[in-house]
Length: 306
Image 1 (cartoon, one colour):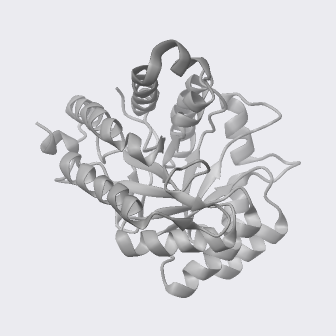
Image 2 (cartoon, one colour):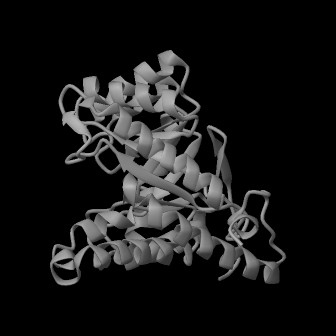
């Protein structure tokens, strides 16, 4: 528990504030919906899904957020433009929360962002993501669409350690960094994802969170659940309890390093992620008084959960 010497930026995306010193704002919790293998999806290509079940999952996020004080963002995942547009349209009607526009294809993300901007939902949409594969065409299209918020995936395939994550963000004399690429694209609200590759690498990603915030002062977090999902033996050796406990442990470990957001995996995991992160947020905020820091919202978990 600490205070960063560098001034910490805070972005307001769709009414959700992300960033700041530990103890100022609650951690933003991001659960994924309509991901590959999600049982509520009936046709992954056409985007057909069980609407009552999807609505119930979203309403549960609203309930958990209200109870704990932790804001939420939905990570809306789709493999085709047709599917992702349907998902985004549904989510935007069901909740006022921001959402990630998430697809493995940059072409799909761009096409869906165009649809979103035409609907006037740009203030709530977060492009996910700009990474080391970004090219001039993708940057130009983001600029043309006037996209303002994006996740920057700080994965450096040449040096996948914390310093490598900073290097790919900042760039060098020989190569433009991802922060400059985002600036060229007109992105104003940059959320740094420090890239989890597997379960052991969660430690590297957590340390990189501290490094990025110390050096750059930007809102930072990572997808801890990605690492647990790749840990094949956890369910075999420890069962469903082992899965939920390790997902929780990995998430709260990043909060202790200064994370402003956590992509915690399947949206249903929110039932155990929200109370755990709320408790740790409250602990951090209580200790932050030693550094002259107090919560900047009355809805902080410190005031909500006890």
